[in-house]
Length: 310
Ligand code: VAH
Image 1 (tube, rainbow, N blue to C red):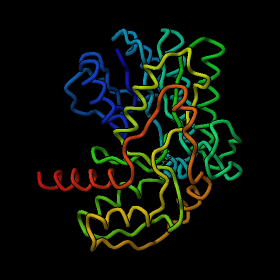
Image 2 (image 1 turned 30 degrees about the vertical axis):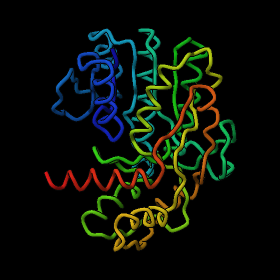
Image 3 (image 1 turned 60 degrees about the horizontal axis):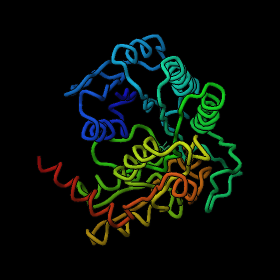
């Protein structure tokens, strides 16, 4: 049985569906700070309440925690102290429950765990990590904490450094890479988009189906093959706003892109890599992305158009 925190966020919304399909709805305990309609077991949970998290994990006799509840990079920069409380307080609570109840543990890190001093192209799995955002500090600290709980207490912690994730089910909340989701919705709505990220700003990106498959693959991987744990570089696409526009124009020639750069989010984006190296994930647990930019664009445009029709 799997307890998911942040179950109705951008990743959680689709991960819960995938886990229900794979393991059965009754084996997935969805928790979120928001009260949301859900067909399977649901508990309202603020992850800063460690006692309640423990009670839920015990009540449903879960064997795995997938901890997704967090504030993303742009929001975290607006309220850094709150971001520390939620991102680190929630993580410590979840790790403590995993330790007490001997649970397998997943939480995502991010390309945001890298900073300006990190090599920007083909960023290695093991390299300098001096992020300059609160979100990045949370992600590096989280990686170190998860490795600590593995080495010190034997908790089976595993994680990936997610790139910007693109999806059409639930919107991302306050990320720097959100432009890469907005651009598709605006393409369908207005055949145009004004990007808050400047041209030639390269960042790693991935389509949500590849991200979800990576989580399941990592969690089901043979532990004896894992040389790393928290957290694996994984990416599918390295792109700048004009690359998304060119890809959309393949299917919608009249699409127009222009720019109105947001200095705050541009500064965050500039501190992140252009393209990270996923070799370790491929070698240690067979990671392989299946969506390139054009394949993702085709699916995103079709699925959003279909949603608008409903
Ligand atoms: C963000 N989408 O923009 C998240 C993610 C790599 C980006 O961490 O904050």
